[in-house]
Length: 194
Image (cartoon, rainbow, N blue to C red; front, side, top):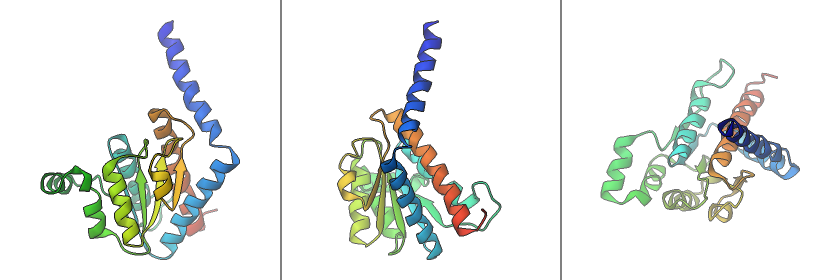
């Protein structure tokens, strides 16, 4: 019985966090993030995404939705997840230190007009912060996905979506919904699928 109650509590935490995503300031931020990504693709530029751990998987998920397609059979959209190349990450980590694992890649692949999406539930991951700083120097627009506090990223990013929870798992669950919302809006706005 305790286990079932525990499961219900976890589901309720998720539902409550998602309900908070309906607040006007959350909707406005989601709209602004999606609109900037749509603009980037309309200008024939790309998205570059990074994150550690579960957020690395979210970065891969985002890139897959853009490249492969979300719900529609459509043209591909350019998107790179910096967490996908193990050889590159470990080479940079070995030669320069793990803090440079994303910034070095961003310097190689990023171009003005691209959007760099940094995912860190704490908002304080050193390698993500360094990548954001590198993006800023290159004139690349930056978007952050963080938790309720936003951490250091809140003040560094051009746009920062702060998921309405301090709990890492709940913030990540909000990030997944955010990725799906963006993917849907990108397809609707760029490919006129409405």
